[in-house]
Amino acid sequence: MPKKSPKKESGTASVPATGGLPARRVALAGFGTVGRTVAKILCERGGGTIALTHIFNRNVAGKKRPWVPDDVVWTQDFNSILHSDAEIVIELIGGLTPAEEFVRSALQAGKSVVTANKQLIARHGPDLLQLASANGCQLEFGASVAGGVPVLPALRTGLCGDRLHGIAGILNGTCNYILSRLESDRIPFSEALEEAQARGYAEADASEDLDGGDARAKLSILALAGLHVRVSPADIRARTIRTIDAVDFDYAAELGCTIRQISRADLKEQTLFAEVGPSLVPASSPFGRVQKNLNLVLTSGEYGGDVAFLGAGAGGYPTAVAVISDLMFVAENLTAGTRPHRALQLATPHVSCDFETPWYLRFWVKDQPGIISSLAAILSAHRLNIDAVLQKPGFEKHALPFVITLEACRDSQLHPALQEMSTQPFALRPCLSLPILR
Ligand SMILES: NC(=O)c1ccc[n+]([C@@H]2O[C@H](COP(=O)([O-])OP(=O)(O)OC[C@H]3O[C@@H](n4cnc5c(N)ncnc54)[C@H](OP(=O)(O)O)[C@@H]3O)[C@@H](O)[C@H]2O)c1
Image (cartoon, rainbow, N blue to C red; front, side, top):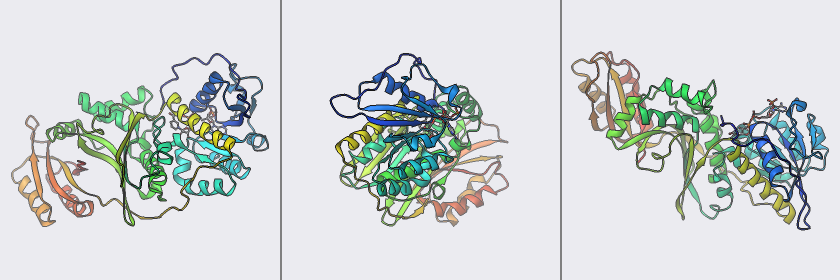
């Protein structure tokens, strides 16, 4: 959830044509947090090559603002936009219904579309890109991942000369806020969540954020745009951050690490290794240094190596900037009579979460003799090598956390051992396993 807009909704400006070029006519659908901010910036800037002609929203009477020029048509009938002379539709309604139908009908009517809608693009992006191409239109969705961080436009232009094979990111500001609060003050998870909700960084029901649904939708869009693959969010494994305790940050620190929700996708031949979940990362790494609700995306290319993008992942103003940047890109192409190249031939690789990494295993046990030897026997039976055993003093014997780290192995090799270890009589909770990303 974004913070409240820092600016007042005041002041009017028109958006006339300049420089002899016709202004591109733009209809805005959705006058909420982002839509209102987009309209505000367009009206404030004025004098450009964009002319806002329509604003669509339900219950439109209650939405009207005095700073919108009088010649802008307010409507709650989307058909009036479809039948208008608007050339570009900005979709900022969100969700799948009715946004999907609006976007499809706009493209079918020959209107280009700019959207910030991650659900829509994650589920239907490839089909909508085809539809746009078939109708001679453009579809841009730069604000749908990492809000104001221009990673998708960079994938479209600045990095299209490389052959990317990996993308990783901190894509969910809510999770990063909570984990960095656990890190800085070792507060309980529930307290960090309540704080995030009170500050407007988390929804009342934050399941989509905490359990990885939001981040995996964004990862599928990044994989589409950067790796040119078609992957459904549902095929990407998501692990929750709800299992992380403040004590995990103490143990992570002993290993020179901290914990972040990391979304990662690696394309290796015909397999896309992809997952979202809490992971140990070096405290001094770019991921380890990302605080509060910022987003970070790292791309890895065959020729250009690694590139990082950092910034505000949400909020009315950063997201509106991303939307308007897309809008200007589309408008310039319309004026020039060009259309950007889009990779419409997408691969459909096998999707796997079977990454090979070292592991952090945290146990919460009722202390008794022989625990370590029992666990070591299980690990050895599954041919897993222990790297270190860590136990901090100061805990009660009836509820004792300790950690075993493992040398690199595949997720699939670890999984059966985890199940066995979690059902031991001394185990108070299932073992927490986190990949260690170096
Ligand atoms: N907010 C962010 O920081 C952020 C960041 C990145 C991407 N995005 C994306 O940007 C899009 C817009 O987000 P937002 O935060 O601006 O959402 P929002 O504040 O909820 O605004 C949505 C607007 O659409 C209107 N609307 C919803 N359903 C409608 C319908 N069936 N018919 C007509 N109008 C309808 C709403 O009207 P009512 O007021 O009547 O409900 C509201 O004005 C979403 O796709 C979101 O995922 C947002």
